[in-house]
Image 1 (cartoon, rainbow, N blue to C red):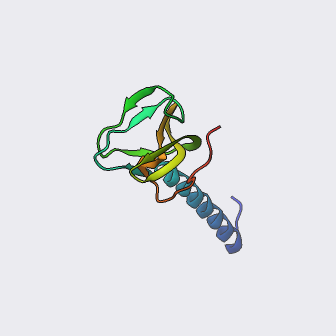
Image 2 (image 1 turned 135 degrees about the horizontal axis):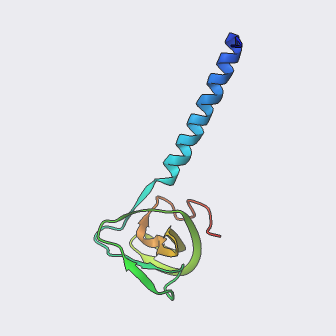
Image 3 (image 1 turned 180 degrees about the horizontal axis):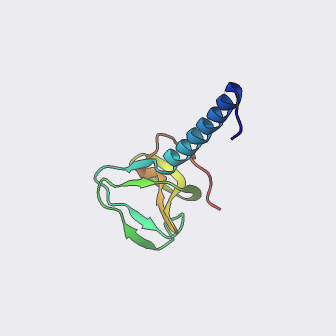
Length: 112
C-alpha cells in the first residue's frame, strides 16, 4: 500500500468535492420546473409555432421542465408577448408567453 502525504489527501479530497459539486449542479438545472400560467390548459405542439399540430394539452397549473428553446410564432399570453417556444419533451413545444421563467429572453440553450 502506497502512503500519501497530507497534501496528496487534500488534493484528492478537493478533486472529489469538485466532481460532487459539478454533478449536483448539472442534475439540479436539468430538473428545474417552471410554472405554467394559472388556470390555463395549454396546447402542446409538435413544433415551435401555432401552425404545428396540437399533440396534447397540459392540465391546469402544470409545471414543466424546459430542455431547450426555439424561435417561432409570436404569441401574446399571460406573461406577455414572446416568439420563444419551450421544448418540454421530444417534439413537444409550448409558447414561452405562458410559462413563468422569470425572463423575457432565453433561459437555456437553443434547440438543435
